Image (tube, rainbow, N blue to C red):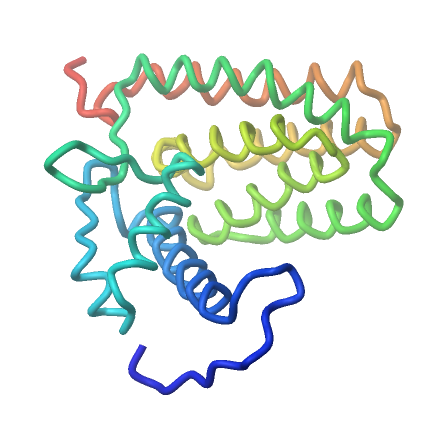
Length: 237
């Protein structure tokens, strides 16, 4: 970066040097910037991510940009093509169908693990998010709130590999979830809200049987409805 950053003589508390700490912070900043662009749909599936352009735009060196792209690849938001560089993954209709089937199986498991450990404060926050969803009319804001609602219901799950996989699958399907919501528009939001309310009721009652059943049906409905719109994937009807 252009600004002078003083280097302290002592190491960090976790054993890393000051240079490593600064480099890690720069990578995290670049990753946050790109993650936001991808999740908001400003970088669409197939879009190329050129390291030099990102470095120039953010006033960073190429090294933290490369590290940020590795972080995002692990999160399912970018992929590396040999001799071509990084891009946002583009999925076929069949690939998205399979990923949604994976979500139908893994997310109810994460929810069942989470349910007993959610506090009344967690329940209150989920209720607040759902109320905001019901009052909202903006697509981008809905996607943020919907993500906060669902990942919030899994927040009590302490199985790290499961949490990482669930987040990766969410990231992989973000573009297609955006297209799904745009297709339905406000006229179909009552269905989403009804399903969320059933799910929230089961979460508050700590009923894993109902919670898993409602969640699986919620994800399955999106998968089936997306399958009726091959144009979303660039496939021929």
